[in-house]
Image (tube, rainbow, N blue to C red; front, top):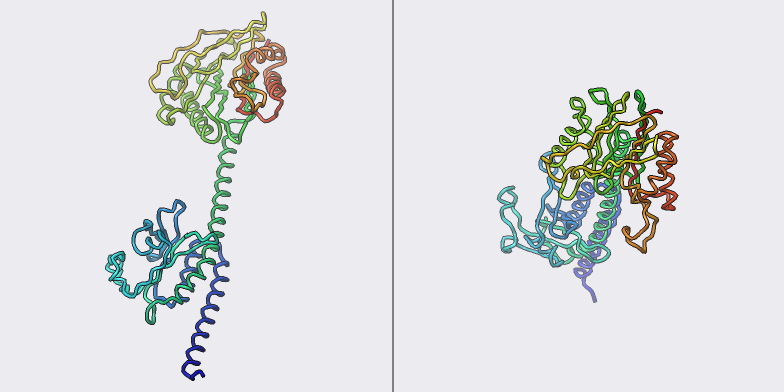
Length: 437
């Protein structure tokens, strides 16, 4: 037969269990009211402290690499991030082995760092540190609660934190995914802005007519950004400067190199008109900024708008093709120096001076034209049949009389037709310069 005292104890324990269950339900609801990670950490700590009747505490999360715990705390009006290596201190030990730690006197445990109390003036007496586990039972953080307001922490406090743990881990996972999604969205916006800027400084099509010279350029991307560069620049001596370059690789990184090269070159052309000197200056200034293994092929020239006199220099770029209208012969303006970015101080030499006669056409291109290949995953690129220079020459001879713009369209269409795919595997950049007949 039960006694009034025993019945009273059972009722008290039942009331306490109901109170804890109510707190747990309230906490579970509260933890899913925000996706802000900092705010969520505060809610988790509040729920843990109230659930075990703790005076103070910290909620740590495990870093992605599993090497440290971190949390954010208020210091005045600022939020500071604190970090603790896994395995160090009491919280670090819990993260390492996944076992809860209950201490009735923390100063008796060598793992406790008394310097925290010395700095803050706070006296830690009791502590309960417990793992935060996700649905896969993996430790993703640690509860660290100090100084139970009445007595010491007990097994029922551990059970409460164990129940709270699943809700906390799920809420943190949702908040982290939300933060990652926001970060990806932010990065996408910034990349889109960068690509928009690049497309403005490197337009898909460009046409320029000056004196007796007509020039047209084209840049077709294989990705969202291009490492190819073409430009038409009015030089200080009245000539039309032109260039085509190709940064190794493609994508945003190569596009940034291309933008840097453009900025350097356009700055130099304000006071310098000699293609050879411009090429040397460009190499000397761009080389220190290129990472090891990165380089840029470059063809640079200048043509007089009335006489057709042509000067040029080539830094490892595919030979430009000069079609003589009167004879149908093609002259190659071959590489004359190493690629830009290999080493500064290289002495470039200019190619032999040429003169564009009436109707003559100069075609510059990147290897996205000649090395375009049929999509064939069964063979390496070097084993596949490529578009090649002979096909390019055939298009040049057949279409040049129709003008630079028609020539570029014909080359593009021929490359796409040859590869049987509208999606090129490399950037395609073309520049055609023609002296009026």
